[in-house]
Image (cartoon, rainbow, N blue to C red):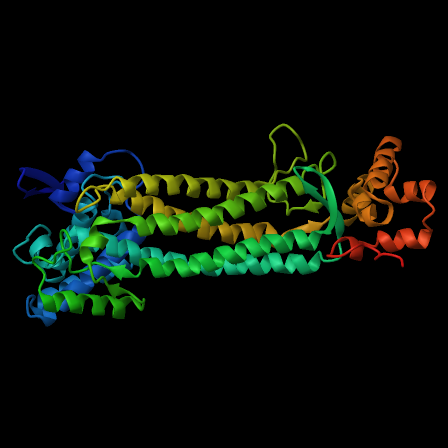
Length: 468
């Protein structure tokens, strides 16, 4: 293998001649060889976007020649297009508050720009990773800004996906609006309800999640570009500080704003904890819904069996014909992972010290993973589960009739104690409440039908009204 020699203040290292990364990336590869995933590509692309913006601004300020600026911009565009993905090899969990990631981008952009200018990789006299690509920047303003941009883009996607899920649940609410079933509290028979009402409640929870996620973008719009190492702005000119934010706004199309106190943005990561908390709330609803669907579809003959989930794959290697609720199980695990990530984000954000948080890589990895998992998980959940759910009307009716839930409709007509007595008799004799009422009371068949009318027992008011 052909190599080139690069050096830093620690010493010299051999770098594969074909590699666009340099000595800083190679040290990070050796130091953080955890054997797990590398830095999230969406974070890499947004860092490259910032490098592009910085080159544009520094050229306008006459700090970069036209040739250098154009080469850096072209290199960054190729990174954003995914043409250099194989060069971003540093582990996501790294020391240094993201410095290795920033240097990885600096080196790849510099070496590709050098090639564009006709030079050979490693000839940093043409374009230098720090002096040129990283001009007027620090990891500490580039990294958190890139994370905010990547997160905002993902939040918007998640908001749209949640809106689609809400709509799918509302369609089921309408489709199942006339399916009478047994409602349950603490897994015990409770009151009658419509299956559509159950799905309507799911839709309301997801509606809140959609709105929370949509509004979460507001928490991430302030950026500290130009603040450099600790937010004071040293080594960045006043013109650069204002122009870089304007340029990033133009390139992203996002409502980003320069922080009026960049030291705060550099030090504190509570906004990520806050928005992660919204993702955790969404996960709570998704986990609850998925668990409900598994219960309602259980059986199908030996369980509740009130809905049928789309069959997606064989469920057992030893039990022929078994089909498991794999999609609800998938979204349940996604929800659990997001909850776990939220705890990691909380710990990392609270562990920052003085002017910087060394654990930003864990925050970035966990936060972006949660957003990506939720977005894709919600899409799969809707397409492969929710949209294909079928009501088992006969089973819903049978479960309701075998229960004593309808006894609650009698309280205002024969009193709680008498209704309880008849409910007990129905259970002991394995009869329906309707049959027991006919045997044990003077209520006419028409009056019983009026009191136990499905449309009366599933809405506010006194079923059947009160006779004058």
